[in-house]
Amino acid sequence: MAKNKTAATEISVTDFINTYVDNDEKKADSFRLIELMRDWSGFEPKMWGPTIVGFGSYHYKYASGHEGDAPLIGFSPRKPALSLYVFTPTKENEHLLKDLGKYKIAKACIYVKKLSDINLDSLKNLCADSIKYLNEHHECACREK
Image 1 (cartoon, helix red, strand yellow):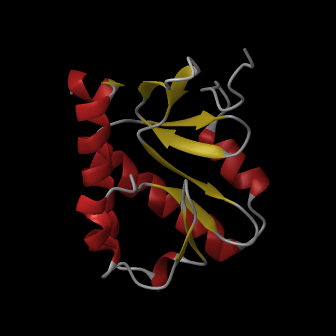
Image 2 (cartoon, rainbow, N blue to C red; image 1 turned 60 degrees about the vertical axis):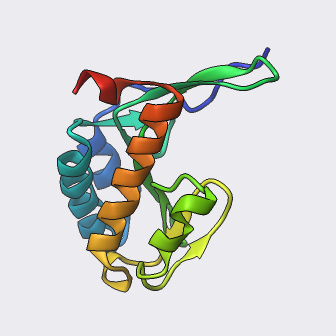
């Protein structure tokens, strides 16, 4: 079975942001997200794979037998947009997106151009709901908190 490419690493989050992000606004938004997600999750930031800043972790196992670990919440400061890994798409929590602001969504993440485009209280609620869901459905580091 293939190994998961998105594994936790020992790379410095600060060094990653300072070298990878070449836009001053996105760099400032990245450091702000680190502060917020650290506070909301209770976990220190850690690099996952080459470009994801994650907080906490959970273990998943699919019916296919594929399993691995992933961050509870996180983001990646990609060139076109910030990719936010903060949402578990269920019918019960879709309402949390209505007040978020200007964003696009894909299966695994929410894309925002800049933090000023979104409501940070709504983002906080999305993060809290995602952590709650992961805690209820997976082996989760958040149970230790």
